[in-house]
Image (cartoon, rainbow over all chains, first blue to last red; front, side):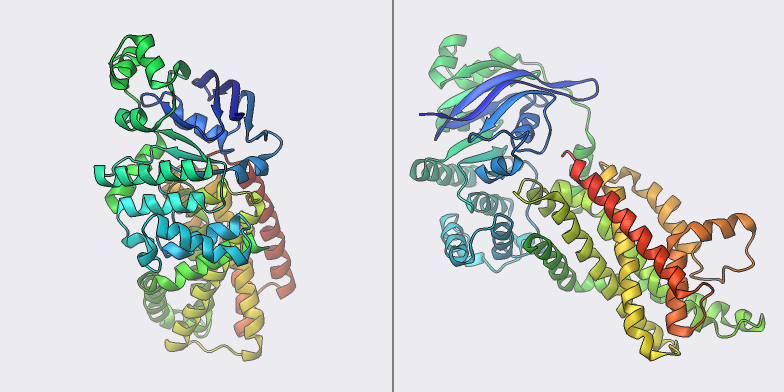
Length: 263
Length: 248
């Protein structure tokens, strides 16, 4: 099997900070890949670079054979994404959110309806298709975002802390969908999470990043062997230390706070 | 084309769904019309300037357009982080199309807002002298709306969060509003203020709209249009340029 994601010597520097410091890794086609790390380790920055939202300082990237440097659209067509922050339009219905995505990704009209219907049924939102998204719960919104991310049949699905703030039932359901689609469509899943049990259960390959560097990578067994521990959580703590990362609140955190207060 | 259309459509749909927001945004212009219109009316006519409502009404219309337009531009900051705009940033479509859709959507909404306020001004006694000019007036309102939505996106592309918002409000939007001749004639002002009104693009919108609706403009309508279209083109270009460069 070939590699669908290839990253070599990726570096991203912001003014003073080196957020991603010489990172290299591969993800095989059809693999479920977990990208773990404490807050501020460089996970989201890496995802943003892989998904063409940020330009790297240096390094080479291949996504589904395309280089984001000179073929952004090739890369963009290859992946679907569920962002850390919601990216649905609350004032539109579930159906309209899907419809807009279909138009942006130029899915032919003839198959648009059928595919939207299939996916909304898949994430169990078909009955609510004409409801405004603002009336949805957090879990329903996440499911809709997953359905939307799958709409253009991407080769890769990126998920940045997709289960944050969801109850165990919803989390469980979500991973069931994702595993199913991974099996059926041979779709690669690249996700970040703070829940070690999720990575343990679902990921076929795990990378742990800290201070912008990958500190360990491999299967769950390999990581446990390497660190002589019995669970991913222990391995994770051994590799990244148990001090709490004190991040100063960024502008986005402040906006997030305001968003919560004002609904 | 479909990208521009779909982003435009999104804003139109949102606008008509938020009835309470539409009504809420009419409160301020209505208050200005009643308080200023009736409050200063008698002084204005005693000063020999004629009917103040005739003077004020086009000003209030464009005030409403200005606020709606500039906010729908600035709204991009929010939309980019917590909204649908984020999703469009990773879609395989050119950025300039996203921006155009967004700007045209905002400008269309602002124009609607102007039309509704026009209705309000009729209720409080404003009478256009030449109804035939109404379509031209509408076009001018749309250009003004386009100008300030573009300005809003230029600002939004350069701000990362809402913290600079108050600053923009008090040192840009309010002066544009108050020093545009919306509330008082701009001839005979002290030199410094006269200068500001001259470089304020809204002044030319005010003047043009007055000329079209009541024949009370002080520059020629062609001067007004030339200034408005030129500034709009520049801002739209800048907006696209900055938007292309945004890194999330």
